[in-house]
Image (cartoon, rainbow, N blue to C red):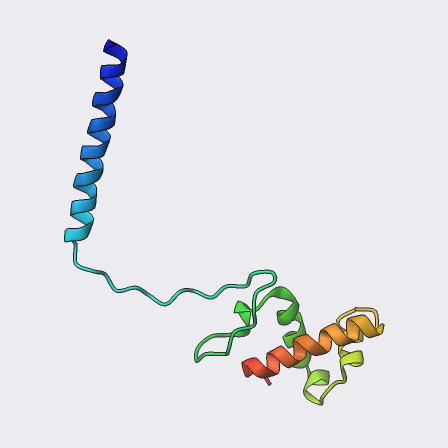
Length: 112
């Protein structure tokens, strides 16, 4: 009985502490919430480009594509098969088509 009473008192104290904490949080003035930081996550959507946001927020695969396209050779224009070869990928249709999809997403993002 004594053990159960001690546990009940501790639980009651935790609830009282939580109530005080909640009251303190609710009494504080709201703080300004900064825009979320967009980071590269595998499988992430390629978001629209915003001012001041560089290609470093892109997933590594997209960053590699951008680095090839920004090179001297890439600035002249490349076909997806050439881009695949420059990235060290096999130039089989599945790889080339996947690369074409990624390139289209970059264009839609505004990286063209």
